[in-house]
Image (cartoon, rainbow, N blue to C red; front, top):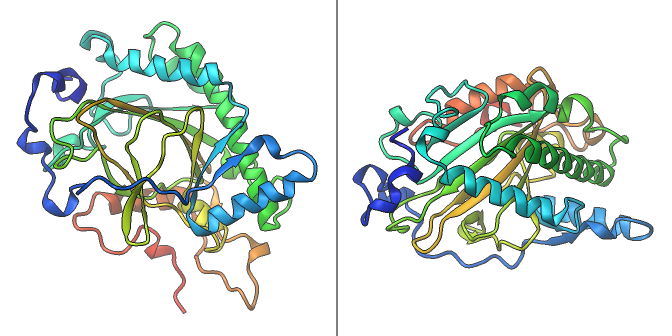
Length: 342
């Protein structure tokens, strides 16, 4: 528990040595806000506007692998209450947080610090994370934190609403790709989890990292943020994602890149810290079941457009992905073993 950044960071005025990133992993100068990330109004999906909405999503998925959505159906008061709930959680006394703290990366509901394997790291990330599965709610609700006392009721509602949003976006993507209705239902979107990252005020953001560069292994990710910190790698440089009020950042992930047969990108991203304010991000992941067979959608493969990726089980990909992201230095990408090279 003593390793949690949120328990001791307010008492330090310089960055501890084991949090100073090597030069090649430091964030560098402040990255400009990217003006090219589309903000898509999901409230315009009815009637003749639906076709334009699908077109916007497909274009963003092809060019960036990331976009923001507004008027998405998740109530504003629920978003605010959930964000406040997590601020309360990370501000709780140590004795309350230690109930869910664990060094075991296999623990389903877990509060931890830095990366997945703190003890094996040479240098640490400036963050604490609470993660747990949320779907089906009835299977996992009893494992969630008991404090704050309203935690389980609020997160049950939040998980239900964000799942509706995620499935809506998947339906629009399926339509845009020309796949059959409900393509992403059942096994391909069976699992959903949450990862809530808390980045305390940092004494020297130029030397520290909140979380390093990566692409997500799942299908799609939905992120709620209210402060700057998320960056994506675009055109050879890191650029910031504007934290719009009551918006969700939608990030396409590796499984979507594979299923689309390379038509979509998975966005490479990272999180930086701040010397003026703490930041909390609420991340919801929709993923295939572990036994799902992943492959390019057959409707997107032809003689003229051959498959770019092999067929595999999602659980095999996850094992290889976890091995890849812990390597230093990394070579290629986590997709490498699954690419079909001509």
